[in-house]
Image (tube, rainbow, N blue to C red; front, side, top):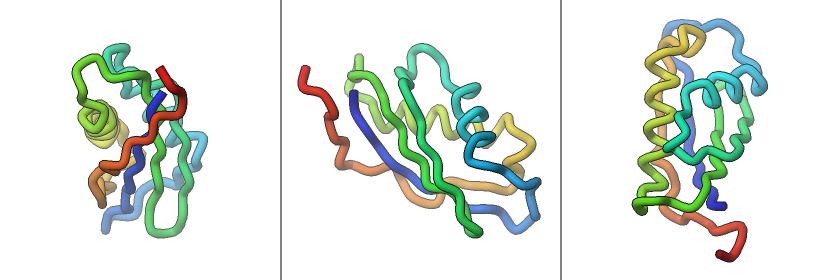
Length: 100
């Protein structure tokens, strides 16, 4: 399992109140089996949200792409996140949590 982190910021348009549990649900719904999402952790603050993706071992060396794909789908498809955007790229320091 690998971990990568990113940040979302709220848009200018005031979105509906989004709880950490709701954002986790939205991200899980946006994930597809090929993305390898095993777990996602979210912390929300007044300016946005920190995202921590726990992903299975990459099949093609594209961990960041999986996190980006999930997040892009979520931002595109979830009306609760209207105006939100990805603030920072996902971390390059992907940390293996379990030795293969």
